[in-house]
Length: 307
Image 1 (cartoon, one colour):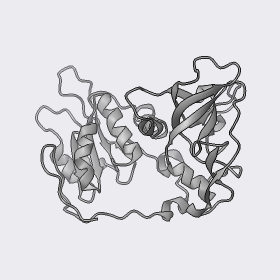
Image 2 (cartoon, helix red, strand yellow):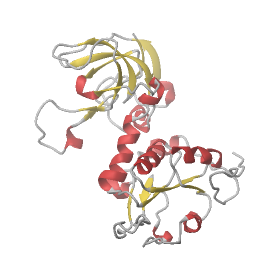
Image 3 (tube, one colour):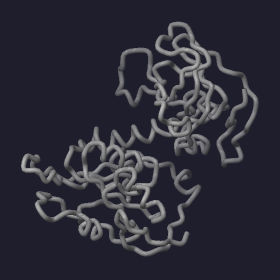
Image 4 (spheres, one colour):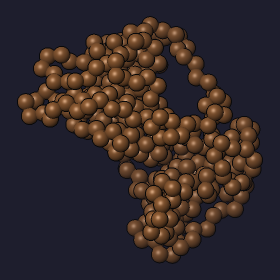
């Protein structure tokens, strides 16, 4: 098969498109003919050497494709099934450590999805929803699970609360908006790219704010005042988090629960104890758009910006 492989850490030039052996599914595994693979920061960190991986290795922690072959003992999947390859490989034994210390990841612990085929444990596969294309399905697992852990597991977001998603046009931000909206929360989203603002409304944002502005003040202007029982103070918002949960705003119905304490979750070192490797953070600096520093509302034209 053809695959992208990394033989030694380094810049993008170390990615090699080459021929390698097609994997054989072991007992309990499924061979997937890949149609799409997602690109994540983890893949870059591995390629740079910031995350250890045995080499040569095929990067790519998640993908989507069609079942080509099943190993012995596999039930629930058969040739022709459309599936999503999730990043996580769990041990075939009772946990003696917290799950996040025992789990291994495609493209780091073993060959991943930058290839025509990948062999994956059956437990790492999900059926692809018919309404999603292969490219869409391949991009869902890692960012959506991260956003879910931040907002729901750690942030304990509840219906009727208000959530602020900072950096909302990134993968985690896009997932966080949709999850918070589905939970029945009121969603404020910030982005430096004003051209993407209207799309965030389609995903479930109630207000979109240019993060180049004083978005604490802008969010104060956006929040409802009549009938609100919020204890939220805009000054408590935290800049730079991937997702923040600064509000204890209750729904405006008489039966709404009392306001809850402001809180935040983040992919930064402050909440996870880890930081993105410096080499990965500095390899491709972001360019900040120059444009007006005001927010815009649904139904109005987004402010123009110049890259």
